[in-house]
Length: 365
Image 1 (cartoon, rainbow, N blue to C red):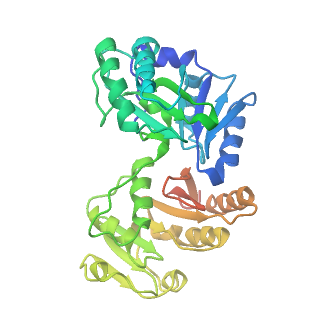
Image 2 (image 1 turned 60 degrees about the vertical axis):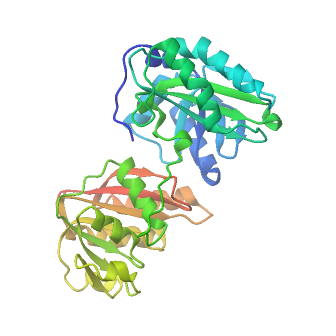
Image 3 (image 1 turned 90 degrees about the horizontal axis):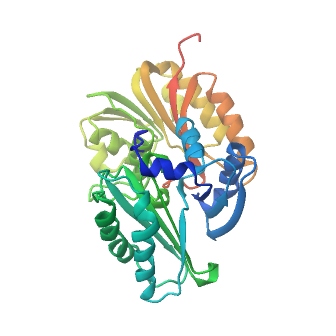
């Protein structure tokens, strides 16, 4: 996630008067995301679901106020937010690009802070023929020319969000300007994608890569890490890529590329059996096992003494279809016996689970 940087001037000022926003979550967890929005603003109104998991809302709190609160304590299920400060009707023709350019060069350009890098993030839903790239190309040069703000798609400090929905949803584009740090994610709609690497062992690697980014995790140089339920070795491979020496615990086989790495020690046993064998202590413990949420939490509590005081742990908490909120609350209560929950998010690469970042409590504290 972006650092909590607020560029001076226009975007923050514009957010201060903006009460409409677009909230994005995984469709399967949208109800939980809406509960989080209600908890943050009891008077929020949900106006229209623009696409699965994409909700247009209007609140009593301003976008800036809501974003500031969520920067301090991020929600678990809300993945991305952006303000709505302008809208335009779309009919699916090439003329839509002209209309969007006109809106950009009028209302939106005035909201950008000059000399502050910006990017345009576009999402298109429904039956529209336009590609996000085409819309970005139609809008970004006009914004840069009129506002004086430089275009920087890699490291923007302010973001122009464009969300377009097809005719079945009203044929509308919703546009807004915000500080990049206020959107909860650097990626449009929170959709963080990673390129597949030739050495990739499993798609589970993307979860760990995303968690390292989202939680700002620091891996110590030449640290020692424990990967519980490691097979086939995706998380172990990512830890090795970050120069960690890894103990991989799993009765199953590791991918040969991981198993043959001299920086990997494979303990072919269960996590419970390894714990009973007086294991070493570690800088990092990770756990992506397919396991009941409460049992997994209890196992992580049992492993807490094996974590150095300066270390951290990361785990996925699996959520069955029923009583997800109760399951999560119970797992958190167990984890808090030994850890401080430093972060919990439903990441883009999570499915029926969330990822939890843990810091060990002081012994006896």
